[in-house]
Amino acid sequence: MSEDFRPDTLAVRAGIHRSQFNEHSEALYLTSSFVFDSAAQAAARFANEEPGFVYSRFSNPTVSAFQERLAALEGGEACVATASGMAAILATVMGLLKGGDHIVSSASIFGATVQLFTNVLAKFGVETTFVNGADPAAWQRAIRPGATRLLFLETPSNPLTEVADIAALAEVAHGAGALLAVDNCFCTPALQRPLALGADLVIHSATKYLDGQGRVLGGAVVGRRELVADGIGPFLRTAGPSLSPFNAWVLLKGLETLRVRMEAQSRNALELARWLEAHPRVERVYHPALASHPQHALAMRQATAGGAIVSFDVRGGREAAWRVVDATRMISITANLGDTKTTITHPASTTHGRISAEARAAAGIGEGLLRVAVGLEAVEDVRDDLARGLGG
Image (cartoon, rainbow, N blue to C red):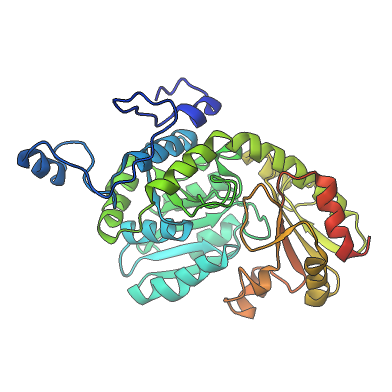
């Protein structure tokens, strides 16, 4: 679609290729395979000598529409969609790295990503060093000349909303001949565009804000064509961690309202964060738009808002934190995020419960920490629900 269109237009128009029926809403192609006009055409499609669809494990019109639209929003040349956010990270590493390669990653990342890097990839000879994501010098020190191939970070991070300097880390990565991959789950392209800041790849758990209503699983990787389509695409085609056409169709509709939702939920989150920061039972609040956030100025340069995640430490440790969770009547107790419904979780016993206590401590995830993903309810009702467990 024309690059002259603005993001709001791309969010509802990019990726549309109407069929012979000239439908207005994007079509959902529930088919496993596609029919060819001749044996010669089948051979040409399988040999990548002719464009067209072959098999829905790696090529489907609905999935392609989602890929085109997300690539347009992120400002990338190409996108590959996957079955989940974790599948997107796995596909990135398996498609672009090999045994003996080295990853430098922020220590402040999703618990399952830590497990993937330390327990799964290590079996294949890919080692990972974890560093302070907010300190570019720490990333530089961790580089292994000739071995480091990928720098990986979430910004803002899960769950402490730590913000890393994308432009500075791009310089570190490129100076070492490595790639910079940014998990943009918390901000999405509605608030932050890492490729424009120098990143090579943007990774999404589309399950979260891209869908926005907690309905389907999905993931995606966006970047330059030679990295995404040519580098990661062959792994997806062979290994098959594919996004289903139905899920792609749901995600397409989610992208249409992405900016509206992200801006509204970010406003609610900031209002809630300010209220929590003044509460006597709360020790510390983590939200990038708060002036007290250690990377506040950087966050406001990189993104247009602070996002919808508010994490906070409750005085009294796990017992006090669980009391807040159990006292809620409206907020959903679930580890998922990105929904229009506000959710709450205790990271130390859920999302980060499978990593060691030492790793949690190093990442700043204490027993009193709670993470709230603020939705679209009246923020006063979210506040009142939390107040029950906090004691007013």
